[in-house]
Length: 340
Ligand code: SF4
Image 1 (tube, rainbow, N blue to C red):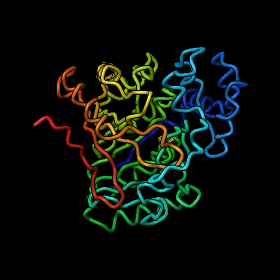
Image 2: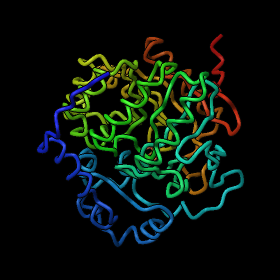
Image 3: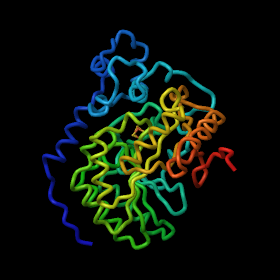
Image 4: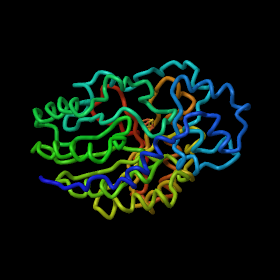
């Protein structure tokens, strides 16, 4: 399909890239911005060497000033607890460091995970890919060709999931090229984009991106990653409204995180706020047991109790499915929350 993507609306595209380039990377700067004294966080700050800190200003602005327990801050600030070695937590909890070809993970029969870009706009401390060797799995345009050839040769694949890192770190021209290649593979039906970038930098939803996703013959689903209602502000809602109006299916998946959203009333507020922003709650994951993130973990029994409470508060369509990912399993493992 011949598609005309207007050559960069430079001002708009430039905006998100500027925001990305100006993300806060020094924990002291973030703490000072939030009117917190870095001297009180010295042992936490040391954990940045385990996984760099990265926080766009737009996201930092949604944090409450002078609150060391802010639920958005707790997702991104390095913490001393990351040095703890905990049995059962390792660097590759989903055993995905072996790719089918560089940049392509073939975990499920009909779906492949296409690692479009290695980096992210925000570094979430609980990320299951915090140790992922992106340097070996972050191909450029030539490298993408190998992944495209793999997909073209396997007729069982009907869906491509753009992943990362964050796939929207690629610019609109690069995405246009990639989507055009995928459209030419007849057995592909759907394109799914897993991203947190428009959450932390809503200006990433450019008119060009919206148009690109609206025009493709592939059914397009965007799966955002939002964990707490405070992440949803007017700027985010306006950006997602554009996608909604363009006919993109919008779903959200979050992670259950200790002291951040492990509470039915917070999760109920999150679902309500998501739906107001035209996004349907889809999955709520138990933490992947990645080394350095054990302090975010919730045991399964407590998670089930939270979900039972959530069902009392919300209509069924606003309750996300509780699940976990397990290494070697071909699909996500739903958790029985004992309602039947
Ligand atoms: S945006 Fe997603 S992939 Fe990137 S650090 Fe956060 S959880 Fe990990």
